[in-house]
Length: 69
Length: 134
Image (cartoon, rainbow over all chains, first blue to last red; front, side, top):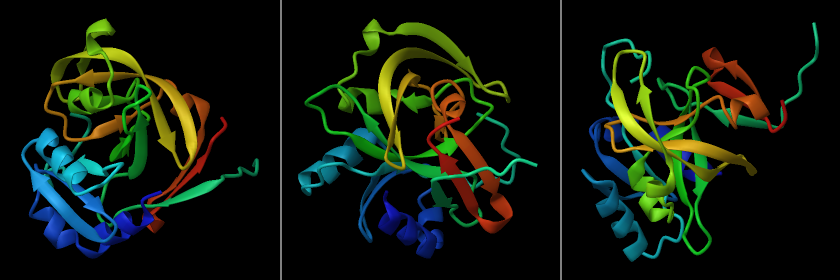
C-alpha cells in the first residue's frame, strides 16, 4: 500500500524536511498539496479528483530525543 | 529459539522513526483516508487527530471522553470511537482516541492492533515485519 508515495518520500527527503509542521498529501509521485490545515489539504486533494487521499503531518525534525508527545 | 513467520515487510523511511502507511475507514458512505502512523507499542491505543474523524463521518460526540497523556507531559482530551485501521490489507476494528491536541504523529498503539498482530523490527536495516495474527 502506497509504495509509490513511500518511494517518493525516500527520494525527496530534503523537500519534505522543509515542510515540517505542514499537512501534505502525495498522490503517486507528486506532492499535490500542502498547508497548515488538514481540511484545506484534504479539500485540495478531493478537488483534484483523488478518491482516497494520502495525508499526513510532516513531523518536526528536532534534535530532542522523542519519547512520546 | 522459535522460528517466527511474517506476512508483510515495510521499508522504513530513511532517518525516520517507524512510520507505516495505514488506511482509516469510517462510516459507510464516507471515503477512507490514508496516512502515515507511528508504530508505538508503548501507546495504550491508537490515537489520531480529530480532523480525520470529521472526514470519516465519525460522531465524536457519542464517544467516551478520556484524557490522554504523553511520556513527556503532553496532556489532551480525546474521544474514543470505533474506526477500522487497515494495515497491509488487514483490517483491525479499533476503539481509537481522537483528539484536537497538537499531536506530531498519528499513533498505532497496543489495544486492537499490537495485541492482535505480530511485529518484528530490523531498524538497522530499515525493515519492519508484520503478520496479521498474534
